Amino acid sequence: MSKDSFLLGRRFFSPTRKTIQIFFFIILLTIPLLSQSAWAAQIRLAWDPNSEPDLAGYKIYYGTASGTYTNSITVGNVTTCTLTGLPDGQTYYIAATAYDTSGDESGYSNEVSGIATDATDLVVDIYIGGTKRGSYAIPPSDLVTPQYPGVMDGPVRVVSTNGAPIFVSERSVYGGSFNEVMGYPGDQLTTEYWFPWYDQLNMDTWILVGNP
Image: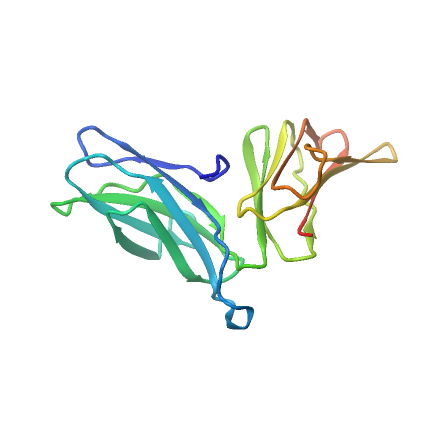
């Protein structure tokens, strides 16, 4: 599991108050191109198992608004799950619960969010100063150039969450001068890049992320 996956943690019903850790990432479709539709995207989940002897399984709750879960599935005592039939490009908010053999269910875990994508899109997360600033789905041969007004912090980290290679640079304009810095490492078309600093207070700065 990638260290860049999202973390979802929560205390459950057990007296040991075990914390569940759930990571999710976007998975690539394997269906033929002609079979794809606007509702063909997926989100895959995986988590570390609880160790309580009375643990019966887990439930996954998700929806398109934070804190409002209009869908749920019971997955049993397993450690992976795939949400299927999702509209491409839609952001989902996801939480989990655990339940025991008596049917008692825990409260919600903390919430994470992600974008459902099909096989052709890539998804990138951008972190500045350790804070996630945005998540973007990028179609093939396209790019995004996000800016974050009022932010001056570092380092900057750009991560491809579904393993697709990306092209990344940081561009800025200061006093009429234009500057562009390639992301580290210097070899392009890998899955993670970083920059030492981001400044949208003293200059006009944006991050360019491309899906080659």
